[in-house]
Length: 55
Image 1 (cartoon, one colour):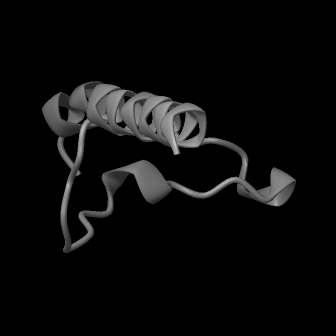
Image 2: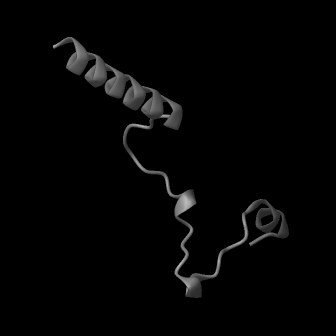
């Protein structure tokens, strides 16, 4: 491995502590930003509260 490549990579965490380099693996599937999930949850909660008040 070249010295240039080693400088760009993040240091490896201690594997003896049970830590893995999972952050480099690319998973397949839908990727949704955390902000959108929080907004959707807040809207769902608001709709349920309004529905309980009105009906």
